[in-house]
Picture 1 (cartoon, rainbow, N blue to C red):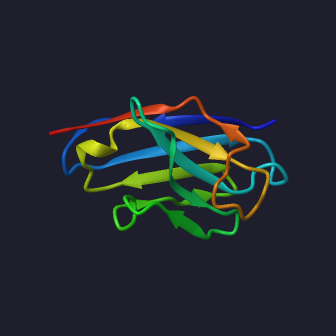
Picture 2 (cartoon, rainbow, N blue to C red):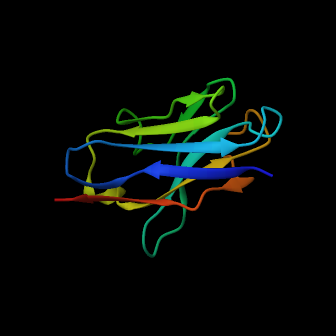
Length: 120
């Protein structure tokens, strides 16, 4: 079993930046690909970005060029750096991990979510 604990998020104005982090409890045998999803009120959860254990990344179209998703395999920690934020990215952001090493849609384990709000 893997537990994911998110931190970061909060409030910022349009054009601002926020960073999220997610620390996983587990081993290199259980923590493969990881990613960030978000869910806005009344909408389905959607993938924001994902990274394989080897470091290959996959970004949604809205995240490309503005978000980065580095990971530290030694610390079992995933990050999401979000720049040039717009109000439409306001949502609860969820960290996810997967036992598969190379999937671009990790979804075995989930964090509890952290709120990101961008105001005008």
